[in-house]
Length: 396
Image 1 (spheres, rainbow, N blue to C red):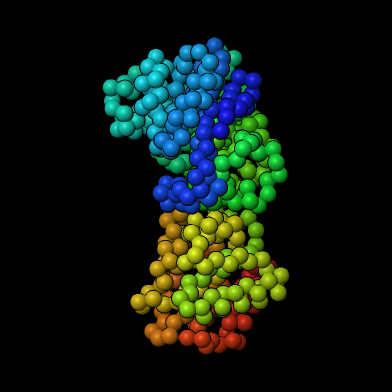
Image 2 (image 1 turned 180 degrees about the vertical axis):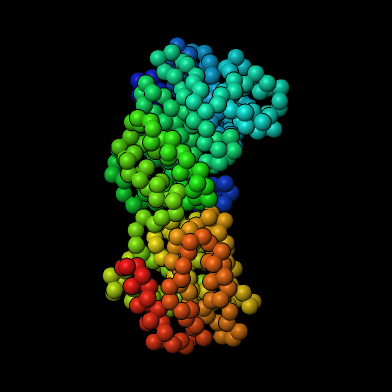
C-alpha cells in the first residue's frame, strides 16, 4: 500500500497483507486480505498513530520514513496495542528514540509487558478529553475501553474533523484505494459486518458508549486501523453500528444453517429455503461443515431469524453446529428468533439440545415446534407448519 494523503497534513502510511491463505488472529479466513492502517500527522510537531503487524512491518517502515522525508518524529500515539498493530512498536522506539510515547494508563501497563518497563517509563499519559497539541492540529483523546481491548482509545482532530477510531469502524479486505468513495455494496458491507460481528460483536454495550461520544463530534472523516478510510458513507456506517451494537437485525430474513452427514438433512434445509422463498421470505443457506463460522455469525447479525437443522452425533449436537451455537453465545448475540429441525436414525436428541443452547441467549425466542427427520422420513404436515410459522414471524 503506497503512502496516500488523507488531508493536506495527514497521510496514511499503513500496509496491506494480500495473502488470502492466512487466517486473521489465526482464526478467521481473509481471502480478500486485510489492511493494517497507520496515520502520520505533519504540523509544528509530527505524530504517528499506531504501528503495524509483523507481516507488513518492513513495508510500514519504508512508508513512514518516506513520508517523514527527513523530518523528526516527535510523537508515537498508541491507540491500540494488539500485536496486529503493536508488533512494530519496539522497532519504532528503537528507530525513533527521541519520539515521545503517548497512551493512557492501561496502555503503559500492557506495553511494559511487551517491550519492558524501562522503555515506557517516560510515556505521556493521557485521559478522557485531554489534548495533545501539535500546532494547527490538536488530538483530543476519547477512552474506549473494551472496544475491544482494555487500553483502547480514539483521538479526534477538530481541525480536519477526523476521528482516528482504531479497530472501531474497521473491516476485512485490502483494496487498492484507501477511501470509501465507491458505492457501499453488499460485498463491502459484508467485510465490515463480518469484522464487527466476530471481532467487536461481544462488546455491544461498550460500542454504544462510543457511539454516544461520537455523536457529540463533528466528524467528516473516520480513519480506522483496518479497512477503508470513511468519508462518503459515515452516516450509513453509524446507522449500522447502532443496530449491531444493540443486537438488532438489519433486515427481516432467515439464516438457514444445517449440519448433514449423508445428505438427508441438507436436502430438507434446501427445501426449507425454497418454501420460505416462495412465501416471499429472504433466506441464506449455509452448510456448517463447509462454511467458516465467522460467515454464519455475520449473517446472524444481519438477519432476524435462524433455522438450525442438525443431525444427532454421539447423542449430542453435530460438532460444527455446536461450535456455531457456542459462538453466538460467546459473541453475546441477542434478540433473534430460532427454529429447529433435528435428525438422525436413532436416539435423536439434537433439537432439544440446540434449543437449550439458544435459551442461554438474551431476549431470544422460539418459532414453531421442533421437527424430527428420522433417517429419510419426516412429518410433512409438521414441517409445512414450521415453514408457515417462520414466514408469519418474519412478516409480522
